[in-house]
Structure formats: structure tokens, C-alpha cells
Image (cartoon, rainbow, N blue to C red; front, side):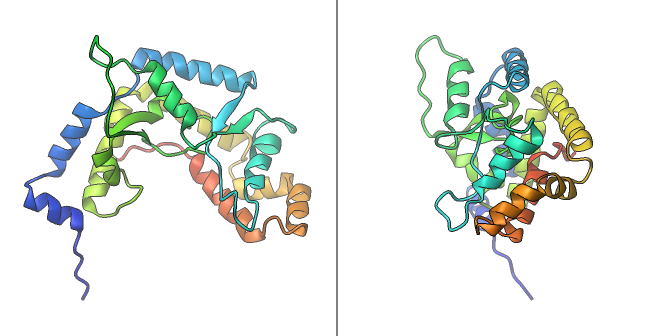
Length: 243
């Protein structure tokens, strides 16, 4: 018989903290872009993708590893998702540079004086940091108190993490419902017209020659290709809110 001891639950019991209190605290303290401004920024992002201005995503894989899996990301964006030879999708310099600038420029804090946020960090509410439609999307970005970060699902497990993540994502969805629904519609269109309802088959088939060249040069292996495809499948999936 296995006895699970959750350190977070033990901590919360000791200090009489409930999941409801934690969620209420997050709602009071997170900082996000106002809805009207977010709508404007969403339209700007869509327009810039259509006009092929530089758009940023987070890097896939380890650039210092034995295999150059970033080549798969380049293939995906430069020769598959968009017209062959496209080069406007760029890698963010430090994984959060562009989101940070977006938040700093567009968040209005409730004070007439200069306000400095301490012990806050940028959080992508719904992940999808390698998706060009989501990495710098205002509905996906918040300043989150660092003390809450462990409960967003990135570094912890357990009931508290699950409950907090679900409620937090639901709360943000209520604010940015129109923008997130628009994102979901775009993901449906991509799945239908580009992925053809089967990303694995379509990606391997349309880029067979390029993938063979990478494998022949020991840049990647079949396992890397399959892992990458699964990752992109998740990155370009619709956002489902659990009620």
C-alpha cells in the first residue's frame, strides 16, 4: 500500500490555507493587460503574422545537445506551417524577452506613481510557448506572484496544483473569452487545412526529403521527429476549460 504525502497539503494544513483562499489571492494580485487593449494587440499579432513581420516563439529543444532538434522547429515554421522559405518566425532571445516587453508596455497599474513589481514573474497561463499565435498573445500573459508559480502545474503535482490550475485558467478565460475563442477557431482551421487532421502523417509526408537529409547527417533521429510532432500537436491544440 502506498501512502502519498503532499508537502503542499501539509503546509496548507499548518497555516490554514484552502484552495479557495489561494485562488482568491491569485485573482487579487495577478496583473494582466486590460481587455480592450488585449483585443487591439490580438488583432495586431494576427495582422503581423499575415504580413510576415517578425514573430517570436520559444526555442524547441536543447541548442547545446548532441542532436540539433531546433532544425525541426525551423522546418515546421519555415517550410510547413507557412509558405516554403518563410523566415519571419524568430526564436525569442531569452525565452521571455518579447512577452516581458509586451507586458511592461501595456499593463496599467492602479497607481499614478511609478510602480515596481517585486517577486512577480511572467507566466503563460495556457502554455503553448512554441505556438506563434500564443507566445506573445495578451490573453496568455500575466504577471504572477512568484509564490503562486508552483501551483500552475509546471513544477508540481497533486490536488492543489490541479484545482488551482483549472480555476486560474477558467478565471482568465472569463476575462478573455472572445480572444481565446478566436484562437481556438484558428487552431481548428490549421488542423483542418494544414495538418489535415493528422499532423504526424502530413508533416512526415510533405517534408520527407528534408527529414531524410537531417537523419542521414545524424542531425536528428526518428524518435526526435516523433517527439517533436507530439509536442507541436499539443502546442497547436485548442484550449479546453474544465468546468
